[in-house]
Structure formats: C-alpha cells, structure tokens
Image (tube, rainbow over all chains, first blue to last red; front, top):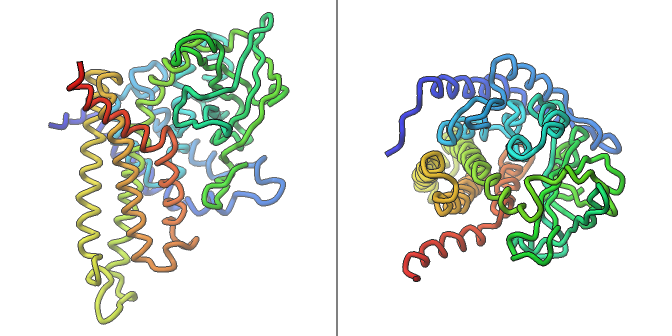
Length: 209
Length: 192
C-alpha cells in the first residue's frame, strides 16, 4: 500500500503543479527562441531561465530535492517523487526550481562529503542557483557500462593531484555557468576492483581541462 | 560538443573533454582514495527516482497529446476520429495502464528507499530504471505516430522528448546493467 502524503507535501505538490502549468509551460517556447546561434551558442543561456528561477525562489519552490537536509525542503524520496513527476512535464521546470540533474546529485555529494571550503566555494552558489555543475564519468575508450573500466587517472604530486584522461557525455559542461566538475578516476590501481576509483572536484577553469 | 539524434541541447550540452596534467589541490578528493563507488552508490539512488518520475511526467504529456490529437475534429480520416482508427483506441488504454504501473513501481521503490535504505531497495531501484523510461518512450512513440509527420517535426515537443527519453535508457547505466542487477538479485536467493 502507498503511504499517504503529509499535508505539507500535498500543498507543495499543488504549488509545483500550478507553477509548472501557469508559469513554466506557457513560456517554454521562449527558452528555445532565446538560445543563440553561432559563436554565442555556448556562452549564453536563455533569459527566461533567470526570470523563472527568481519567481520559483520567491515562492519557496527551490531546492526541493534535498531530503532531510538543512539546505532543502526536507522531503522524503517518496514525497519528492510526486513533485518530480510534475517537473517532468516541462524540460525546463526542474532547472527553474533548482532541482535539475546533474546539479542535484552533485549538490548532495558536496553537502555530504565536501569540506567547509568546498561548501563555501561550490555548494553555496549551486544551492543559490548562481552556478551549475557536471559529472565526468563515462569515457570514450572503454565499455563504460561497467564503471570499473574507467581509466582516467589522478596521481598525487606533493600537495596536488595531477589528472589525465578523456571523458565524454559530461552533460551540462557546455553551459557557461558550469564551474565545477565531479571527476571519477583511478587513484589506487592495485586495490580490489571497486576500490580503485575516487571522486575529485575539478574546477572547470583549471588549466588543462 | 556531442549531439543526441542531432540535438546539441544548448546551452546545457554534452561535452567530450580531454584532461591533460590538470592539477588540483589534494583536498579536492572526496571522502577518500578508492571510495568513488561508495559515493556513486549514494548519489545515484535518489537520482534514479527523480529521472523515472520525470519520465512518467513526460509520458503523461505524451498521452495527453495523443488523446487530444485522437479526438481533434480537424483530423478525421476515413470518416472517423484518429482515436477510433487502427489500434489507437487500445494504445490509449495500454498507455494509461503502463503509465500507472510505472508510477506505482517507482513510488514503491521511493518508499522502500525511505524506509529500508538504498542498499536493500537496490533491486527495486534497478527495476524502475528499466521500466519507467521504456514505458515513457513507448508512449511518446505512439503519440508521434498519431501525429503523423508533425510528430517528428519541430512543431510538437514529441521529437525532442523522444530523443531525451531514448537517451535515458543509456544514461545512469544502460538498461542491461540494471537488468543484470535485478537478475543477480533473483538468482542470489537460490545460491548459497
């Protein structure tokens, strides 16, 4: 049997529903019209996104995905699932409410495992919707469906990791607002298969990216 | 930048990137060396629920478009509404049944995650990651068909929805990886 939704979740669901149908869907066409062509295509994003984000934030429809967290709405997965269905009705609704992939998963990871300075530098602006992020996992040279195959490496050299490798399908990395990558790579090649890889934060502006 | 069925998905985009002697402070390592998969397990559970529920939302949109087209008085062929022609009537019913099934399965997986955690709910999470995108894709495909040529054009959202949903059968692990997890779980019950 399906659990019943708490009254707060029901009211949030109703608000997300009307936000998507009254604010987002009628403006979806602007998103497409505002995408640029030529050399500006990848250093610009549609103005309608900021307009919708400002509205969503003012209405408290913001960062709804973070479960039991000091930063988010504190919804369970079950409760948030109902909201996600509504967001799925427009391809820009999730971003309007700062609930879009891959930022959601990345924010969870930085909230859980990042140190204070990571949270200050990356988590805060992500939660605020000022920057975006990407997740670099899949590689062109290997069968990435078996994630243990990934070959990119990070080697410790003094106080720094030196990263080498090639990734594709890093979704979201084209956006001019994308400032941080979570990068999956081999750090311990001699460990058992599932303990060879690590995740490292790589700022997009680092030399060599 | 890479293309998906010809879409570049600007401004988001899907990048093919090279990393050559990229230096970052050692503090940028998350959790600890060799613990990447541990993080990945935690990261992908909720993400799969989100993806699947958004897929169901997209399926709802496709079903709505299919029904509206089916009864559009301007689109009468061979003396009938499109909804009354061929298999369309059944497609509409099948789409509703499959969409509801996908929703129940996904909500059930979400409820299990909340009560017993990602690890115990792993088979359920894998099941929905196969089922929901496939259901949504099938419904989008039927909606395209009832729209005729318009369905694959830029005049409805269906073509880009199709491209996105087809990709979701590969993103966050292809169907086969999730089926493998489900099958291993089932066989595991009988292996000592």
